[in-house]
Image (tube, rainbow, N blue to C red; front, side):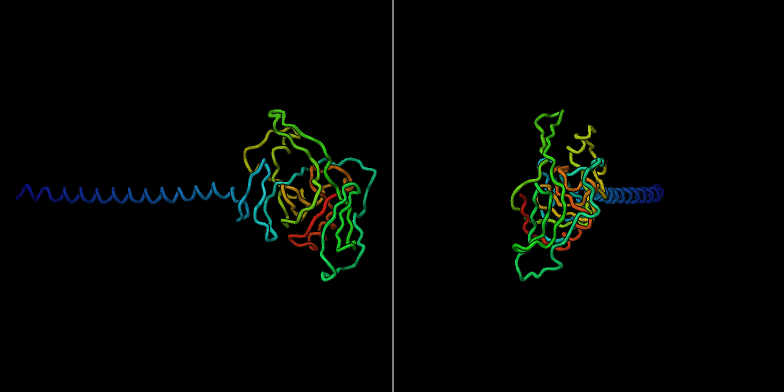
Length: 253
């Protein structure tokens, strides 16, 4: 009996140690789960930058598949900032209105871009409501020196389109060709591609990475200097953005 009584305290200590160890193991398992969730959130956030819609990646062109509301998120445009060059055509202001207002009952509003005249027209039936000087694609080609199969042609597309997206304060995601054209290395991090402020206050997308957006340098307006996008003076861009709705037809000739 004495031997048994001596063993009881030892058994009690062993049981306590076992309970403590089990509690520690359970706590470590819970913390491991919490850390896993935190890591998942950290790595998932860049994939959904500021937008809840699905991102599509097609030949280096990234764009949102949801086009029902005015949005504010990074976009991959066929555009790149360029150094201002001297121009014989300087514009104090690029626009001039032909009509003080419009009545939606008088017909459908649509956009017409004449690339030869470098003009964007807001029209209703046969009436011109607004005219703006525009810059369009420069028509050059770029070949990736490290992979000749990768090629880009910087033209403004011709045809009939629709306004699919309306963005406020868009942030440009520089695609691979923007770095290749400058002779720079293509970064791996998304954060190294983001360039806020170069597209103006608004952008209207009409598919495949093409947008109507602001001109970084007003002295380049009215020329073939873009990589396919249509650039406008900030005041013209604001008028167009506030006038046209999603689904508005866009004709480019």
